[in-house]
Amino acid sequence: MPGEERPTDSGPVAPVTPQRYRANAPLIGIIASLAGLALLVAIVTVGNRWPESSSTSTPTQSDTHSFVPGYTPSPDWQGIEFTNSVSQASGYWQISPPTWVGDVVTVTTTLTVAKGTMRFSFFALDNQDTNYYEPTSGTMITGSVQAGESETGTIVLEMPRGDFTLYLATAAGRQVTALIVSG
View (cartoon, rainbow, N blue to C red):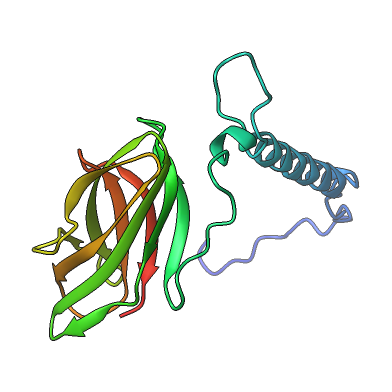
């Protein structure tokens, strides 16, 4: 009937027991993390190993640098040794500090070839926004230098003033090496 209270069972209530977690669950997590870390270290180590020598005609360190060692750039210039992987031409390339007039930069460059023949071109990438620039004028935009010879000339680029990377490339435009130029 409405309003009538029903008797409730007030018998003993079973005690509530907290659920127990397995004590080895954190240990399994730690072991799995360590195994993952070890796998990552193994992958990075194997991926960064130098290739083992083989009977293929891979150039060795002495082959790559068999041309006149000890190239040094002219005072205030910067330079780098190069090897063209396509033609196997090798030598030394150096550049002067840039001369800016507004948004036009001139760089003097010297290309010395010790082995083979280097057919060359140049291009630049702006270090701020990576825009591509080709020389607009100069006395050494493209050309060819044979073993035992050097060529010095200028490269003129029209680009916003700032740091850029100047690339020595093959005549087909394939990168050989690069130098960073402060603007």
